[in-house]
Image 1: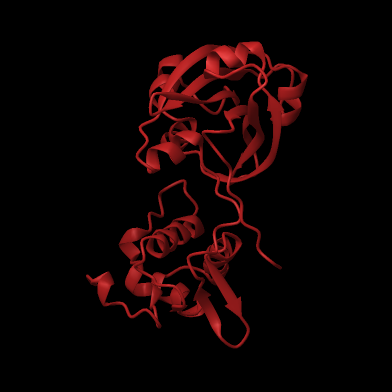
Image 2: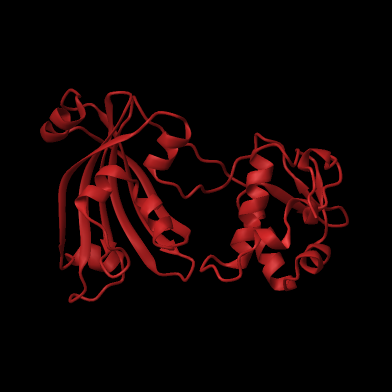
Amino acid sequence: MTVDLQDVPGDAVAPARLITLHDIDRTSPVPLYYQVAQRFERAIEDGVITPGAQLDTEVQLAADLGLSRPTMRQAMQYLVDKGLVVRQRGKGTRVVQPKVRRSLELTSLYDDLDRTGQHPTTTVLSFSTGAPDAAVQKALQLDARDEVISVVRLRCAGGQPIARLTNHVPASRLQVTAEDFQNHGLYQMFRTAGIVLHSANQTIGAQTCTRDDAVLLDLEKGAALLTMERIAYDDHGLAVEFGQHVYVATRYSFEMSLLAT
């Protein structure tokens, strides 16, 4: 059945009209709950499902799509955790107002720049594969005999340097070259490799610009830099990335939203 999404009323959204059995690929390595949640997320962000709209129950949606209730419950919880919907006892699940942002958006700088039409460019400063040092080994939960891909890149947009990015990835999870890093974002390559990111531990800080970074980032020595250290995990709970980045404070900022629980 083909349904015009524009015909879905804003105050009573039937999820089965937004997702059909054809939208779910049961042979894909992407979990079923994540496929469903992503379809809803796109519909909410695109305005197809409007703020205040009430969603059908998990029981109804699970029945319509031929999925289990635990799978549907996990999909809805994903949307709740991202701040896109709220559950109210006796009132069901409703889409929140646009000003409520997701609690964590696990994207890369390349994705952020590309999505906003800023045409990112990348220069690979170093690329190597070898044994991890103690810090990388601990962050990625590896053995000393495991190998990691380590890459340092300069990311630019609009002709200006934005960040120096240092990433470490288990070599067993990704088969890539320096040229791949030159032409693609890391998370883009993860998606191509079938790696589904699920969560991350992230620490944001600040530091002053060193002499080397001043030359690289076209700044004065001592200028303000934002720092971010991230360990990202896939949907199996395995660490797939350890990133240590510095950003030009006057050209980039982090936005976070907090949800009351």
